[in-house]
Image 1 (cartoon, one colour):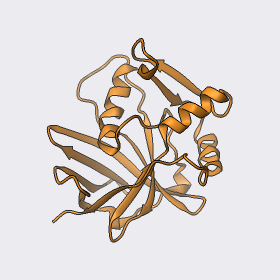
Image 2 (cartoon, rainbow, N blue to C red):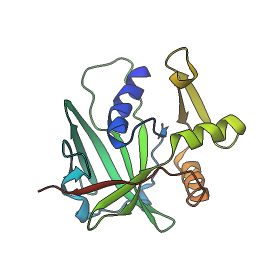
Image 3 (cartoon, one colour):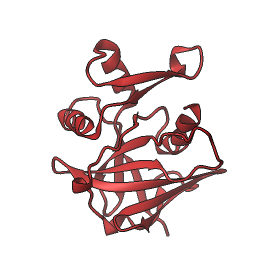
Image 4 (tube, rainbow, N blue to C red):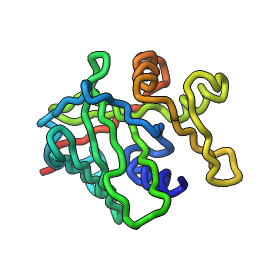
Length: 190
């Protein structure tokens, strides 16, 4: 289980500083999936010339997303989808680096797409906001807390509700103050 979090966290750390919200279930249903051709290609993180993202087509309607930053390369699978008129990207581990038994359960990371052109703006569901929400109201959404150390900061909240419940939660908090991180901006790489 710790290996799952470390792999997912690798991409997460390239997205934003701090923790990100993960789920054991995808945030999308097949009926919600869309293909956004404008995502394909190479992108560079605004203000950080050493961070590059590549979106390549995977299967019929998915993406292989590669993020290279300094000495780290993360490869994840992505699915764009629409929910309540908004665009999102579900990112999950695309491959395992070694044979692990028992096989790990993939985790899913949700990214809200604010715009694709002329630059790609994305925002994560705010982890600190979620952690505070479930601390105040543990029944707000079904989750587990995974201890990765002895300190409070060494605990991870992982959502365990099914996709339909995840979507209701996301829709409920589309406009909730503090629920979404500031946008990260990627520009077409030159």
